[in-house]
Length: 272
Ligand code: KIV
Image (cartoon, rainbow, N blue to C red):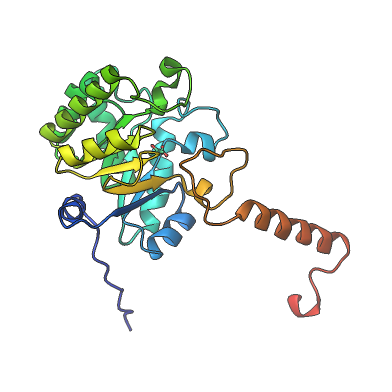
């Protein structure tokens, strides 16, 4: 007997643009593995970002720079297996697209072929326009990322709010228009003044998804482990924690350790 598979209507790049035009906000979270992907997909998330923040969250690095293309593909393929409905967007890691457009395309193709992800995300505007063009020409959907772009942290020097000055704000607005003109399907806008983010969101017809960019954009993205309260010592103003899993996991594991030490686990019912 064959088991009927539940049908899900997959979120697509087009459905995100339609959501913006009817004023429906887009929800996006990161995930890096199968279990969390399945959980957040089942809870109705629209977009799952396999962020290069895996470098921090999964591998414990201080920045996103060290993660490799092979590692991103490993994370992304696990996430894709857990997501039935959400659109899965995969970050191109630092060093996989900046040096030349042909290499950028090769990297994007590897992500699409080897992970099964649905789109890629790249950080930057005008400087990487040839790479974006080449990837788009190959039929691969591209999400842009402007504002605080963590792969440039050593240029910025800190993770503070970007584009507070007129010149940087103007460049950001021009970059957003350029990304739309080239054919990107959405833009992540990270840590910029809410007023500027609102202006950018109004100036383009593709969705602008904010992180630390206020509420007048077309959707929100956060790092899953921050939202679930699994990370400690990170309290930016834009972060809202919806659970305190650090405490919950710590308490569960402490009780398990205690039970093992005191021979309270396993009991007779838990034994064969
Ligand atoms: O890598 C990441 O998690 C991101 C989000 C913070 C937007 O790029």
